Length: 314
Image (cartoon, rainbow, N blue to C red; front, top):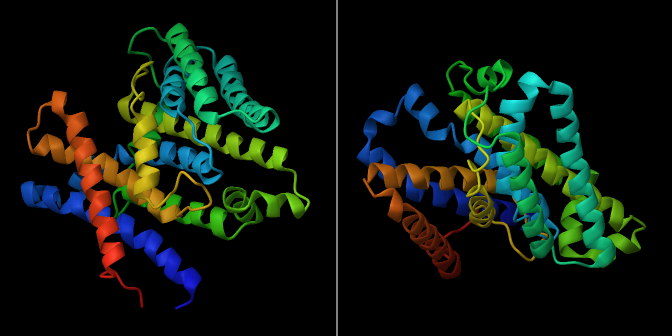
């Protein structure tokens, strides 16, 4: 096997081990979930988490980070549940405006050499403020096409698993089979080489942040379709969950390292962690801390297996 294929195998194997560490105890505690309905319930919420994780992945691949993605997802649920049913034109304009703002943020970060961690924290307050103005309290009326899309039944394989598999395949093609994916990974690994090849770093960074905004919007749509309501605070925890999912999926804060299958598996792992804690009857007050402990344990086990050489590729 070539070194490139070995690297990709590692990128998939580690996240796969992570999800098994969480999934197996769930099967032991609740064996009745091993059916169509059970898997549908287990992985339904993984769809918006995976989309938010992909948004974060685009930023982290070029050594940036978006600490406003959770607030953006909440805002989109408010647009979907409040504006799209009553004032669709305004809602659509706002959605396009979000992507434009993200592209502008990418340009500002590049031209002014600012830290994305600071700029995106500022953006998080803007997104939350807009969400509260649109939908001050949980409620709203999510369009039927979103609710229907997120609750459709697919033959044999539950819709969430089918969707996540297709999503991972399409993302893999984008990252490893397209010129954009090559440039994206190059921006995180060796920016000078990309610049010397004649490509505009400004345009590339704007395109990357446009993708962050796009997948954030898709995550908000998915979440609104599942919950059938709008809430300005519903996804505030998605920011850190997305970061953790990217890391669990083999990503790096240094940039340049990315795995399409890995980030989807990482998102599924983070979703299942909450389910496992619920099955263990751990109080919601302790679940956030318990989630952190489980994530650290999974990362530690993976790193030890990697260092010991027990994980081999053929």
